Image (cartoon, rainbow, N blue to C red; front, side):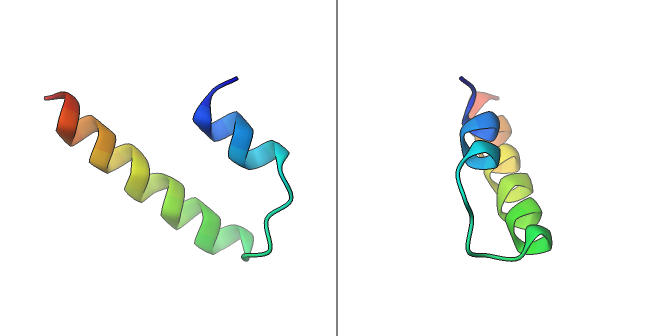
Length: 35
């Protein structure tokens, strides 16, 4: 199971918009660390 799928599958108390912002930030950070 991917990180994103894990976050989507578990109940999240935060608003969906904030969750998407957090996910985008994580993806940006991971892409930077890979390069």
